[in-house]
Length: 519
Image (cartoon, rainbow, N blue to C red; front, side, top):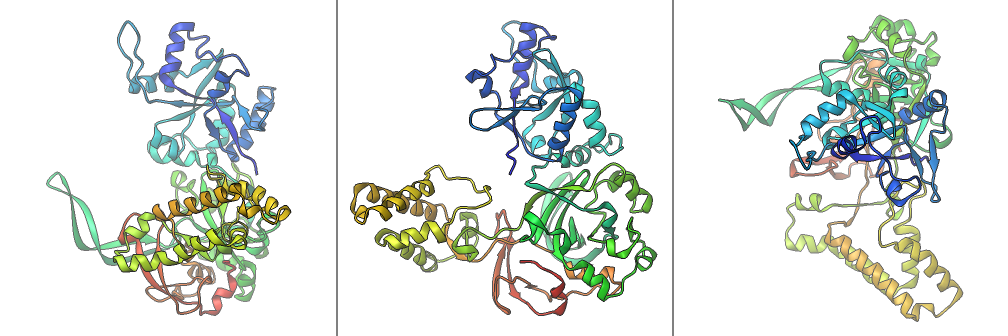
């Protein structure tokens, strides 16, 4: 899996200071190449993304240089873009200070030089906007990359939406998937309007007030959701059931379905779909491998309603390569059978002291087994807390998993190694680590982490022209991890309030679910 590129991150005030010292033509002066001070500047990371893939092609073609270089630890670096932070005021020894707002205005308008190479303002992601940082790009690449990024659109007055959506191609991805653009079916969004009791925050008398009241709510029932035919799930995606997708001005969560089987079983035709204002560039119904809505295609927010013309304009500016941000994965604990809680979740349950003791008892028993049984210690690292195989899991600072590999080899080679001080110290460190997890509220519970598929069966019925009725009753969900009829407690993530708790019944009934492969 590509780890992305390290990029220079520097304060705007420091760039301005260098301009005063060395002149604007030189600008920010880098330390000597390969010195510690030089590599220390590469604090940020440009994620592997659709943007970085295109950026590398453009840099090689336009600048006629290698896009990146690699250090002795196999870390990749690039100077194509620079991250600029706006945290400090420039304070000269003599003269008037230049505040952050003025620095931002100055560099947004003029850009800056780094060792004589000119950089101009490029993009800022949603995360960058919260932190007040911005990416600047080598000016030689700006015209091409801007044209590529903006899909033929012009800058919009709604800058918050514009900056956020044009930066979607910057999202870090784990890989790519090919989805034929003429295999996508766009169906109109469906709104659900209902009345419910809410805590309404409103402006009254010039002040924000919060009060409980009955109010009307309108909800988009397929918000950012797509259905993907099972034929797309091949190679590295063969065992996946959900893919979080990105393309230019497009973001959606796609779920694995037997879409073509549904189309054939229901006798759906292209003429049927187009007569109901559905849009696709397919010339045969067998081409359809994806169903999505205008809610996922942010491009339509800037060009107008869903129409054949607007979809064709979008496809002229993108290709069939979609970025895959993430996919479904079971928890790493006990083969996916247990899930780790958080202190936020436990604090919202309102447990008594006795209930808390009962909740913790299995964890105490587990620690006792680890302390006294060598085979259970092996089970702890090999099965219960298995390391991730996809390279995504962050290694903990204590390095216990790595130490375990050495310890178990010594145990195998030396029958009495468990009686040594080395093993005793290792065992004590493992026990201390488990206790520290409990103090932080990290308790293993019978559960799972899941991705929410909202109204998937309704979307299948919708494209078949059937009445859009729910397969689930109020306060029911479907989760194949648990038995039919089980009472389940659901909590959203991140979890911050008891208002996010939801007690439901598990319902595995319904033949239409055979058209899904949800894992």
